[in-house]
Amino acid sequence: MKKKKAIVIITTLVIVAGLTTTLLLVFLFPGPGVYIGQRKALICCSANDFFGSEPEEPFNDGHDSNLDNIAKGTGNWTYSNTLNSYGEYAFLNESLTILSIVPGPTIGNYSLNFSDHYPLYNYAFYNITADIFIQNPGLHPIGSKGIQIGLIWLDSGHNVVREDWSTNVNSQFNQWFTLNITGVCNNETGNDITDLTLVLKVNVSNFIPLVDIVYFDNIEIYKWVLVDLDNPTGTTPPSPGINSDGFPAQALQVYWILKNHGYTDENIFLMLYYKDDADGIIDISSRDKYANDLIRDGQPAVIDVANGSVTSTRFKQELNVSYTGSFASKIHPEDYLIIFMCDHGSNKVLSDGNATFHFEADNFWITEFEFYDLVKAIECRRMMINVDCCFSGNFLNADANIGQSWYDIDNCIMVSASSNLLAWYYINSMNPDGFAGSWFFHMFWDALNRTDNIDGAFNHAFYWPPAARGMPLFMIQKPMMYDNMGINTTLSFISNPPL
Image (tube, rainbow, N blue to C red):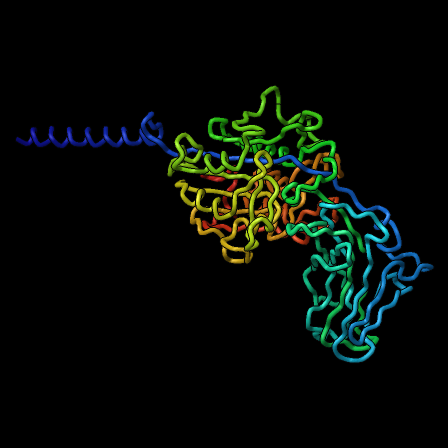
């Protein structure tokens, strides 16, 4: 009897041991029917319609910009006193100054009719910057709107079509700082803009005469990229630049980095618009060994959807979990997902000021609401969304008020190239920084490729100063990140599990 009990016990132990070993083997070496999750990515570049950008050399190199020619005094700048103010050229530090003539409220401005002296290009973006110093020994509040710079757009009858103003500053004393503002030389109402006036403005509630002084210097204006989306009236814009690598190069940078860190072409869905590229190659960087990044080391990039097929309709289909055969329909709850989008964005298409993402092939767009509804329905373990376009922070928000209204996707990290502002790009690699693409995401992905975590990569790009502007990106376009999972300081290509 005891022997029978011993045999039963031994048999039970053998069975338990066998089951344990089997479960362990299944865990370590899952069979074909066991799914443990994969890393997947959708990369979409839907345009390459960049246009050339260049400084307005006559303005930037002349007295109206750097104010260093004492003989000409204030140059073409005209001063207007609205309330208790006085403006004069300061010979000592070669700046334009505004001060008060009596204690209390002070309002005045310098203006320059840019189009009277320099060419104005229709459909170009104009970006103005100015260095400013507020002399305020007592450090008392100056209140009200403070100091601003602005662009005033006029029609042929000298009526104001639109005003674009920088943020106002009323508390930064006794140190130089920079303000900037950008506006496009046209608008969606079809008004005919023919003139541009630059304005340097002081509007304060408490100024002490001859003590509180505002200095303006190093004023520069650049015309930047053009986009058909900002040309709804059908007027023909200027000819495009000789090369349009910027957007395709940025998408390919992400593609090759993912490949470098173990993502397979079966799990990368690449939508790439590079139609009619001027030289037939895409060059991400002038400083690496790859002259054409459509091919690396003899291996071509595997492009799933190209050129004319990269439409808003196709993009929405691929993100639709209910669409048979779509990329999203093949994502499992155990998968890890990256979505990277690169193109032009706008906050003008929708009447409420919310953002859209543009597609050159069909000249249409996906709204932020459509995008949210699609990605919200995707079931996966973890998701990172990168939106690389103008007004991209707005695109990832629930409404037009940039702040704490991010998409409520619990398992998602969202990173945008800018807030509700323009985002800047190099159209090709022939520039001092040597790369084509996004000023923000090129640096962000470069840092990820060096195995930085997401937080480290974000900060690397956030504080990086592009040679084209000489100031960090947070001062130019304010990139944004929101992490619903709280893992941005640990998640990288070498973490466990990896990005």
